[in-house]
Length: 78
Image 1 (cartoon, rainbow, N blue to C red):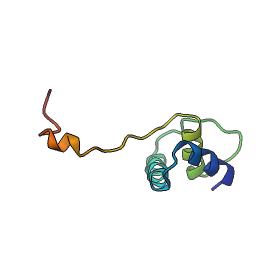
Image 2: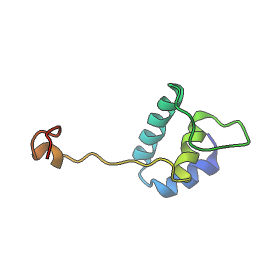
Image 3: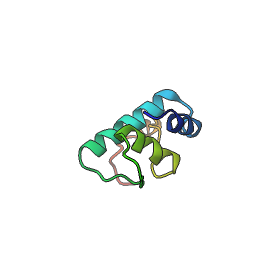
Image 4: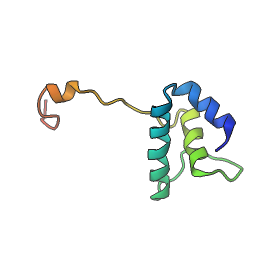
């Protein structure tokens, strides 16, 4: 994993546990055949591709809220 990409992505997603989860989920998607959302002239590891996607704003995350459970069925049409 490239240290410069890690530092840049850490400035965007400041919580290390969230950053780890975002990168690991994206790597799973890439391993399953998803195409990278960024171009690179050099050969990058899948982790570096995920970090570069975060840096360039191509992927983001959303925190789960318990409020949706409290409001009732999360699959109900509202």
